[in-house]
Image 1 (tube, one colour):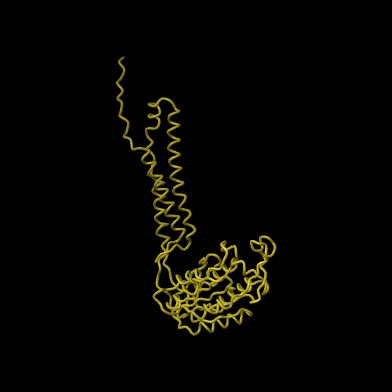
Image 2: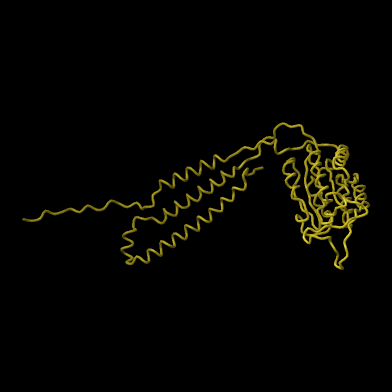
Length: 343
């Protein structure tokens, strides 16, 4: 396995086609200037020592050197031996509903903010496991694949909201299916899902996908956010409560029945979110019933760097280009013998 430590620096490679284009424009400009100078034979005489072939080779050497330097800056690495580690844990996918119904304020400050606080607490509580994130509304999107990088998980969580998934709705089944693709299908254990939602829109596909995941060894736990009595939805775009096509105020209610059924199908538990710390603790205890496996942490893997080979090659090419002449090799002029003048 190889990687580039600073992969964003590979953008420097865009300078290669730009340099090639510059070379073509320069040669075109030289031809135009040559044509304007007048007498072709005189121009040939003045420029007879210039070698277009050598100039081309100097340009190729310079561009190749730039390519090597760009790759060296990105620092290519090969995977080495993993450092010794005894970390054991699970693969846990956290699925967060970010639909507009989660903006309802039946719990303060609103459902979404309370759910995000729970996810943040879960990230801290489950730090000895690999965690992945999926946001869903009318579509589901993988925000972060399974990783032990808790800092990255917190960063993605900050941006969670309805704007992250423009299509509205609640496609629980699609979110579960997407989470399933993150797991190792060859393993029949060590896997869990935590789905956090108000469960408002019933998705007929959800139970079907939940059965498939359960059959592959995935435990599905659900967390209900909101109140069964329901509340209005504040729409940040209109600065008013959300209304339907007929102008009636929309009331969103927590669908506990659907979330309980999903948890039962997935051999997990349903938790009603009141206190985030208590809910996170209950979920941790539930996950503790699953057998754990040795986890491979990228932070414990040694990577061997090879940038110096590319940097060395670039330096040699630059020296070659520097000492290569643009002039043709011409022979010595013929000697002219002067005859003595007669007296």
